Image (cartoon, rainbow, N blue to C red; front, side, top):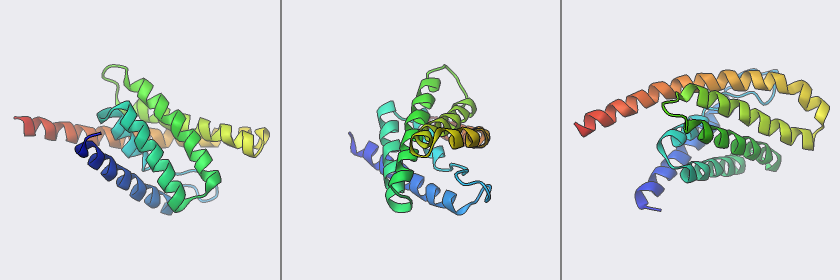
Length: 168
């Protein structure tokens, strides 16, 4: 891996950790645990669109591993890893569709993240409570995925506009 790529990965991993920490400070729905904005997924969405699949997966592993070490625990790491693997896999798959917007890619990532976490919950807790809780999580995952996709689309437009100006 080139030094430029390593530097970019380090900066993005640091940004993801900062956004994870900020996300933990914002109670989206205080009475319902587990519902978050998922701000650090903006970094992964950027990686899906502007980096290789290998770099994207590596960034997800860094994000999950480091944020679990700093802000979480082993059980939380299992949930985050399962959600991250499914989410990134789905986003990378959808990104292969020509000219797809970040909005459906991000929404699918939010949904798949919840599916991965719910599967872990079924194994660790029990099937019945997770099935009762899953619809609320899916609604929030879809909504935050769309919201983050809109933010990413605006940011990507700015990035591409900057790149065009720089090339001219």
